[in-house]
Image (cartoon, rainbow, N blue to C red; front, side):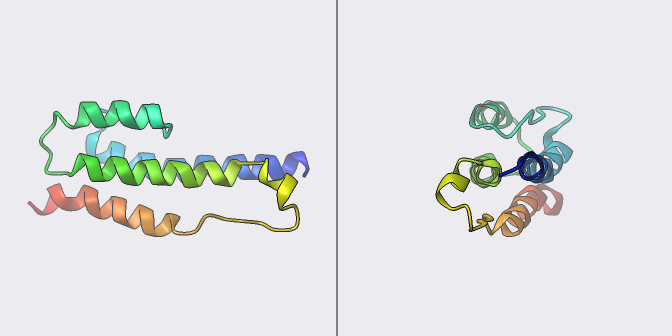
Length: 111
């Protein structure tokens, strides 16, 4: 694997993470912004956001974020090339997860 492949994977991971951070911070950012997509950042956000009453199921949102973070990590995991050099595995379902997240965040809009 070359440096370009690693950079591309990293850039894709950052793009994916941004796709999930932006809608959450659009809804919660003024009160409890989500700072990152690590498990620790998501858990910290979950605890703080649970105290708000914005009509959003914070537990569901946190679970979707954790799943998205795990899939984004797979995108940037260069170690898999050692075992599967000829195969490119792209975690699927990120679009579906993003749609689920958007829907979970819209609950407050329709109330």
